Amino acid sequence: MQWLDRLFTSLSIDTYGALSIADVDIINEKLLLREDFKPKSILVFLVPYYAGETENLSRYAAAKDYHIAIREITERLIFGIKEKYPEAHAKGYGDHSPIAERTAALHAGLGILGDNGLIIHEKYGTYVFIGDVITDLPPEALGARPPQPIRTCEHCGRCRAACPTGVLRGESMDCLSAITQKKGTLSENEIALMRKYNTVWGCDLCQTACPYNRAPMLTPISFFREQRIPYLTGEILASLSDEAFSERAFAWRGRKTVERNILLFEEK
Image 1 (cartoon, helix red, strand yellow):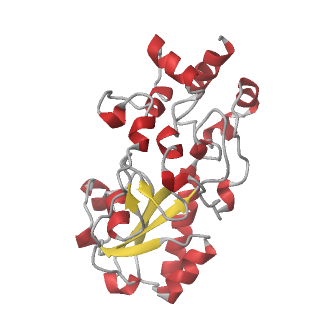
Image 2 (tube, rainbow, N blue to C red):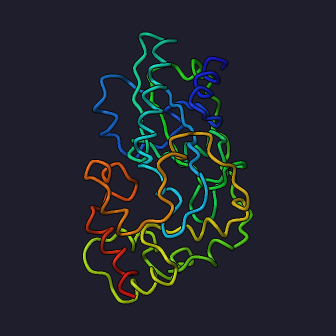
Image 3 (spheres, one colour):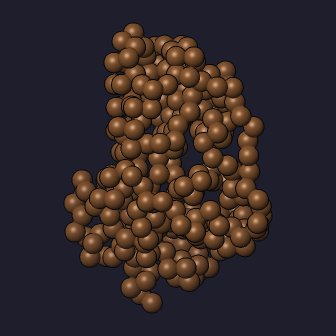
């Protein structure tokens, strides 16, 4: 589909696929029922975000909130679809989707499944988000293919071994990333883990251990290369206006949660 290739290339996205809606897992039918069209097909795509290393927060959180980027991308995709098919209807999603996005991406052949539950791309490693656009176009209009078998990694065990809480080994209920995003008071053990692994937000240890992430390609999407905060301090946090803070990837649990985490290191 040359018109789709051109459309995605204009958005600096090189990994996408199309499926029939009949070939994806619906996990939230209520979202689909809100739309005034009957879904027939889906475009699913990867959004690479790696733009360099960080010091005390996850790599995805150095840039502004990725939901903003995915929303902009899906809006431009829908505009392009409507230019090609004026009568078409479409809706874009990222994270809060009515379909199982990871499974759809794997069935579309966009990557392989890692033992840490993340999708792995040959160029970008695990540093990718998934977006999707659901349309009422027939699948063949988007060049949809039958779903491909899900492929997995080689199960080398490095991500499991690197997991600081053991959740990937079945030894815990929470990962370190989830701990950093908890509201309220943290336990002494949780505080010790955050200090040991020097994180005020998120955890990338299972990703940095993955052989596929030895040399990830930098994202071609400028959104993730601009306005980065690779090292978050109390001074930087205080300098962010409420509007600027709300646009950061670490904002969804509120300013007080992030302030608490930073103070844990200032109190050491």
